[in-house]
Image (cartoon, rainbow, N blue to C red; front, side):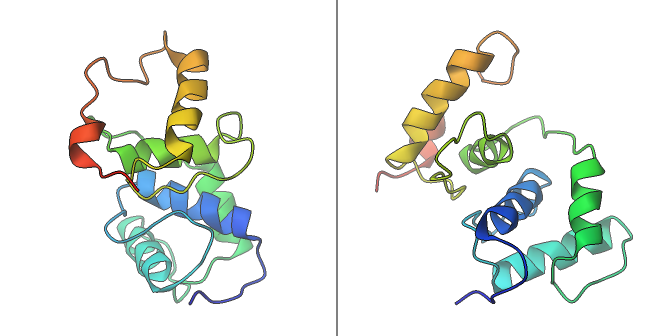
Amino acid sequence: MGKKGIYTNRAYRQAQAFLIIAGHDGELVADGVWGENSEQALTDWQKENALEPSDGQMTGDIFQYMYDEETPLPESISLKQYQAIMILDTDYDDENDLIADGIWGNVTPAVIRHFLSLNLDNGLFPENCTWEEETTND
């Protein structure tokens, strides 16, 4: 069970999405519950960026750094990372129902259709999508 902090589930979900996009996505899921996987991903990210550790807990300074930071996208983007991108931009996830977990569930197709309608021409979506091969239906 995740720890109850001073931030909303939406804020935690956005921080988790940022960490997933930054490559710290092992067992991390962007679901708004701040637990051990979130703490470990945050600690690893802080070490990688030479930031003062916060024992895996989010602070206002960390949120600010994340929002100010330009995180380059990797050359190959997983479904979980695309889900995380869509979480960070509420234009794609109006209802805040999407979870970045790498699973092609019921919400992901609707959010991706919306994403495609807004971004088809800007190169953010690969022409040859292989996500169905790397995911399972739930």
